[in-house]
Length: 344
Image (cartoon, rainbow, N blue to C red; front, side, top):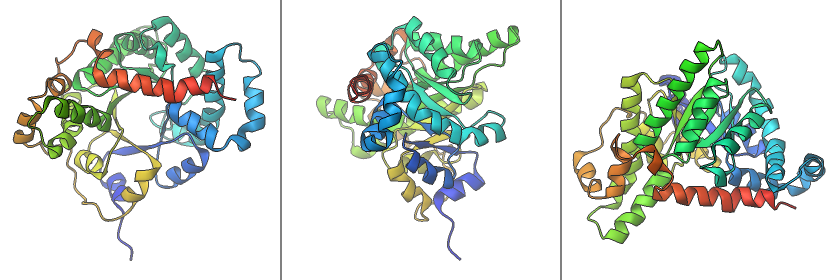
């Protein structure tokens, strides 16, 4: 008898679930067969799906763009074109789970990360596409305000461009405020998924350490995002937050194995799924296993790690200027949203 794959073991023995990280329908079919219960996308992945299969989308692209009156509405139309069928594929899971899972993420314009009015208007439009759209908002001060308002209006949101403990705490608190407002008005509150992009934090701190010639080893860097996620998870559990942590930007098996066992979501790109389906990884719930103190001490020599790891490391007004936040917003805009606006 074949041995059980790591992913199957996780799903059967722990509260961890996983979402498929791609906007391509062909890849989604495989992800759903492997047990995915949601989909994460971003403007880069949306543009990639259209560019790779341009001929398949040609007639539908022309129809979708017919009502677009400016570049931004063009990008939105293309996102809707690719995400609507994904949302439809996920509707059975959405209904089966009582609206807990079965969502597909639709990200607002990354260039609007400080524009409350524009992001809220986009959130309302995206929410109208399908009941299982989770509007992706940046974890900036403005994004947090919009997330609270969305929750109060019954709109489910995913807080993205998020890498730190203070960000996901602020997300959970904004969501809780929105829930109270919704309940006071008799509205079903929107759900909230709070992202930690563990691999992007590691990438950023690696460059910071090299630039500072810090006595930080590569093995320490690979534990930075893990340490942030473990600390955030413990705080969420202690505070009983209603938001759900969503771990994204995995860079290898270690991110999954070190966080396995938590009541959280793992966002897994297709290129890693085959590894996790296999049986070569250890079967152990490690979410509560502490990061070695020696590694934390070395990482603590980096101010940017301290800002990411300590619950009070940053105020919400600082989130947008955090180095990896700026880098990620620029990448999502330049390699994603802007290409959708210019798509031909």
